[in-house]
Length: 318
Image 1 (cartoon, rainbow, N blue to C red):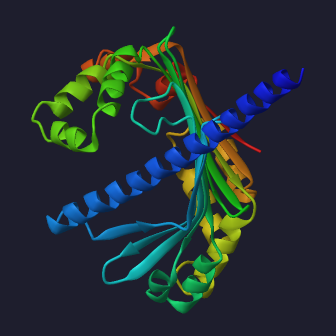
Image 2: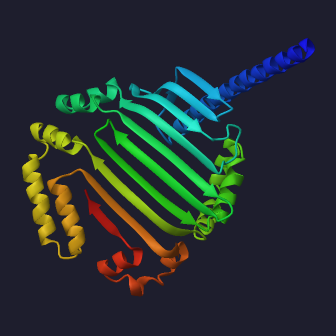
Image 3: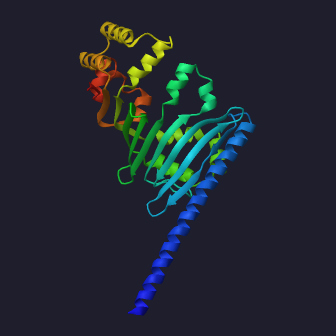
């Protein structure tokens, strides 16, 4: 019995040690990727292709068992300006560290804020307003090999006052996904070399055109941000007061003869009470991108009403 206990303890310690080693190795890979990115930015800046940007960070952590990787305390600096933005954290889940493309992954970016040098370039009232803003974003995708369907979702938020989220689904993505996987397995230098070839854009476009669009949705949630931004802009003399802007928008909607009545009603409701606005569409059958390119849809998409009916477009204010 004692021997069994000893063996079990040794196995447990070895397993824990293996996980710790794997985590440390993953953290090293992330740090190396940041260093490679900074090197690439420096090279492109040296060639006049972009400003000299440098990424900094305070800590990196990895949990390989959960395939979760976190970079904390990031900052972005630009030559001549210094630190222009800070990022509280970036968390990636399901993303292969050593190349390749996972069929499912997500990322969360928390607390993006503009830093001192940028804020100093703004007028005082706007600087104070922007200083109190923090941007957050969630991204995720899921590819289903059996059906060739790709779901992509993003949610971007400013504080807890405004969010813009969208979701769309594509099908027949097998060719483009296979090509993307091939690219992801190349080294950064090989990817850059490939992207410089004359045939690169044509190859990507050809594979993209084999795909089709299924459906999508765009949602705006406002919790006082629009009103606060307009009030700030009005006090700074940059725009009319909210009531004046609302009146102008309502007059424009009343004069527009192209919008269907249901859309007008939803937009009027949102202008009067800007809380939530949802735009969605969905095709009866997946719409092939080649059909859009060839122009074969023109006969059924001559008017806004035809387009709305064809794509089953809905607009709802809540």
